[in-house]
Image 1 (spheres, one colour):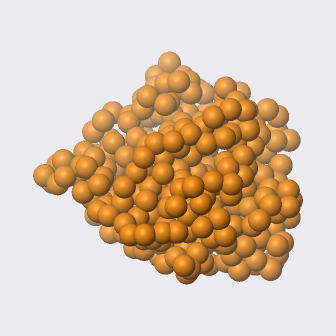
Image 2 (cartoon, one colour; image 1 turned 90 degrees about the vertical axis):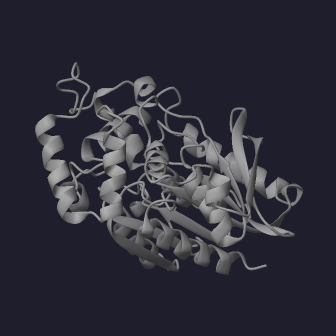
Image 3 (spheres, one colour; image 1 turned 90 degrees about the horizontal axis):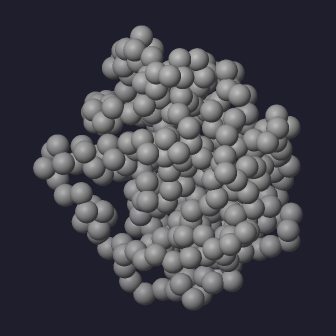
Length: 347
């Protein structure tokens, strides 16, 4: 059980910690990031680490905050208007234990296009592909590629390694069905945010070990890359928002069957056998407990001889990447990631 379960009857954030968190953000965050955080706070989110998984999944999301900020400024909230030239439709793909819902995003023009298999964040417990529409849709436009954003089974109902098994099964499905989607099966990449950033790298490892064709590129946005909660950025951003140290402990508690699971190379990427992976791009936010995970993963990839480029964005927090509709640094990060993917996928 998590050591952060004290005051479980009061599911609101600790008021003293909350005030301190806001004071730190006021000094360090960009103005648009602070405004987005205020929009989220206005929705009265509870402390995820004090909730059941079912309760946590009903909390207001960063995507909800983006919509609120757009409405505040009288701007359209239709994502097709915000990211023109990208269409989408709903499908199902084969998972490891049944069908998985997915959204396919298509750029304008004639294919065949490169294909990006995208995994959403949420600590392997909460959220879904719709919450992470902003990141997937933005990559479709910036990389000029088809994006298949897939849901996977979630903990605690489905413990480790169900999420990783689903991710590999989805990759097999994309290899087999890319042409049917209008894509080129020889030009496939993996991408994801947070827990999905972990899945993107882990799936490349699993594909290598299974003898499958490797992706051309891996994009890993603020990935979970190791289980220690004592890194520099975990300590520096222990009470950050929207992700904090206590929440990460809660996520690990939900997904792991035993402590040994957290040392498995699929979770502990920094100690995993990384040699032979395709080039990797890592995106990090400065105000994020996971910033050091990205830095450590970069170092591990370099030591394994894997080409890697990591970019860190000042003044923004975890979950910023999908908020390009309202955050300047998100627009920059999506453009950078799209350029890296477009260069790798060619066509």
